[in-house]
Image 1 (tube, rainbow, N blue to C red):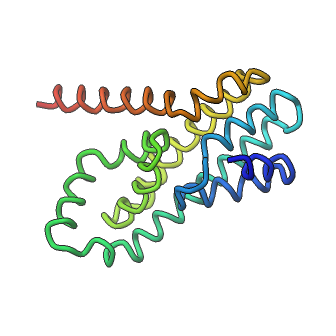
Image 2: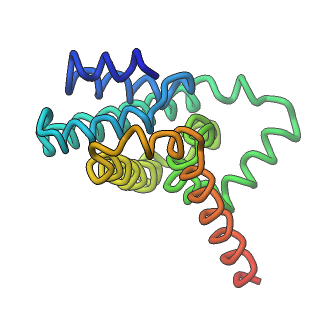
Length: 185
């Protein structure tokens, strides 16, 4: 985490773009921490808000698109195990589109949803509509957290890094999915 924030502090917008592009594809990069740190840098007037938003959003869009392309081109090979592929398609038909949208907020889920969307051969325009709008909300949310937390980062950082915020968002998404399923019947 320290290395990623130092990279952002040193290279600015380019680092945000590269780290978020790779962070969507590879779950080893702390995406939320990078966004919150960038928000803090906006608060301290070290980074420009508009340029940071563009760099972060472009990185998230490039990363999710790369994952989608990997799923479309190699995903069938990865999941070609009879029932698993059929289950994947069925699950994605029910929940997948909204999982693309809200999946950004759940660590681990955002790393898989685009692969599954590609494997399920979701139409590119449908993929883009859900994934890109979810990415924009995700970027704005975590940049805003960093901006409003500002100099209180040390105090609040342990809660954000501890997953409290992620768990709350995951619970809200799970409750919403449950509610939608219950009222569909």
